[in-house]
Amino acid sequence: GQQLNQSPQSMFIQEGEDVSMNCTSSSIFNTWLWYKQEPGEGPVLLIALYKAGELTSNGRLTAQFGITRKDSFLNISASIPSDVGIYFCAGQGAQKLVFGQGTRLTINP
Amino acid sequence: DAGVIQSPRHEVTEMGQEVTLRCKPISGHNSLFWYRQTMMRGLELLIYFNNNVPIDDSGMPEDRFSAKMPNASFSTLKIQPSEPRDSAVYFCASTRTRKLFFGSGTQLSVL
Image 1 (tube, chains in turn blue, brown):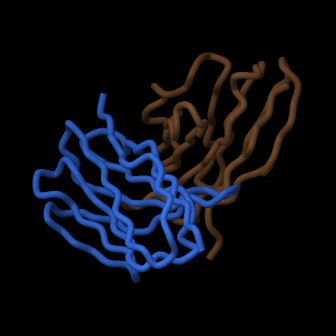
Image 2: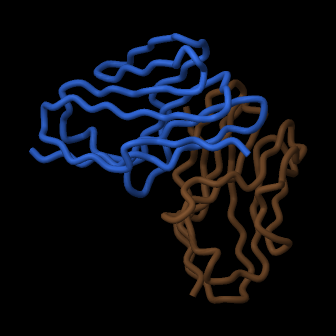
């Protein structure tokens, strides 16, 4: 079945640093979604991407839909303490939405 | 606007007991999904409904799990009998496009 490889699994950074994470797949996807999950809550949608090459921003967050349709990245600029959480990518192809394993972001003030 | 509403938020039960998790999707959404999240396996899709009809239940672990959606505003996920390995966070999510919106989850502990 379809699988996503999300990396890195965890990140420990200083406040103010930029963050980059990505997801790759052996399958082609038509949609890429990026979610953030905080403790005790469900994943919250951050950015949705629908076209190959699409670059979309949401405040300090920027995500891109890879040209090959098999990858996507998420960047966070000038990180702040409230960016802490687990970030998930999700890809939608012909079948159901598939989630990556998540990137746990920890920020040292 | 109210998001996806799940109840209970926490459930602690003993092995062998029946557990029922409830979900109210966002009004107007025509697709509903049940996910299970564990540290080992991440987010796993259990089943999803489209217009109240189950479309894909291939992720349901075994016959102890069942899900229903009697109308557009309510769904249940039942585990009978429950086992300790069912302990996880269960999420309900809904959509009417390609954007999936999640509830806050039910933390289930089976002792």
